[in-house]
Length: 243
Ligand code: SF4
Ligand code: SF4
Image 1 (cartoon, rainbow, N blue to C red):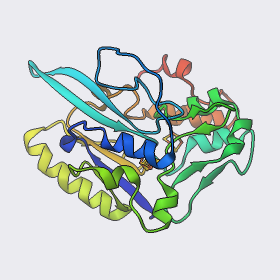
Image 2 (cartoon, rainbow, N blue to C red; image 1 turned 90 degrees about the vertical axis):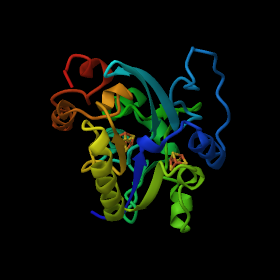
Image 3 (cartoon, rainbow, N blue to C red; image 1 turned 45 degrees about the vertical axis):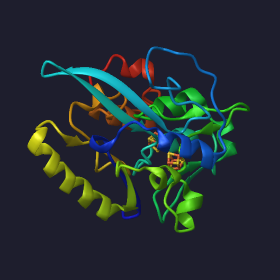
């Protein structure tokens, strides 16, 4: 399993949201109607026009206020549960690209059950577009196949967003983790062996975003679902299972 990966170093993010806008621009996704919710996070969540969203969280850490930024997007799972959920309804709707590992949906996803697909994703990523197709980040497979960086990586001015060969990204992530741990002992990489978008955070990942990290129980539920014993792990089911 080689292919490509991202390394997202949240310690370098200034929340400029250049990646969010570059993603919209490259994918020709329009603006979403939104309103002021008292947060700089805007729009408030991923949607069919927003494949990448910089999430903002205010937390108290060691008696001080900390502001965490988390550039959320599809993790391009090594073994993607959303693909299983879609293929329960329709074949040929998901490309799992051999060369890069990108997980890319097409229009045929409209024949799948959206709630099941969304519920199968441990990171709460898929969204439904008008007309029914299910959409998300594509790893900019069109750009990457032409030797270019993903648009969100190309535009990042701080070194937060990195992309390349998987072994190089893992080495970069582990090296940076060692450095960051000197100042932030709770620093960690999130699910690095399971996904192609590897985040470095300095605190519990759930302090950044409810769905930043997949729990072990989600994996177990997925196996049961594949054996037809329960529905794919959805939000309601997850709500009863401690992380
Ligand atoms: S890889 Fe491309 S589609 Fe995915 S978040 Fe980055 S810009 Fe958007
Ligand atoms: S993060 Fe979710 S949408 Fe992306 S490949 Fe994994 S299961 Fe599918």
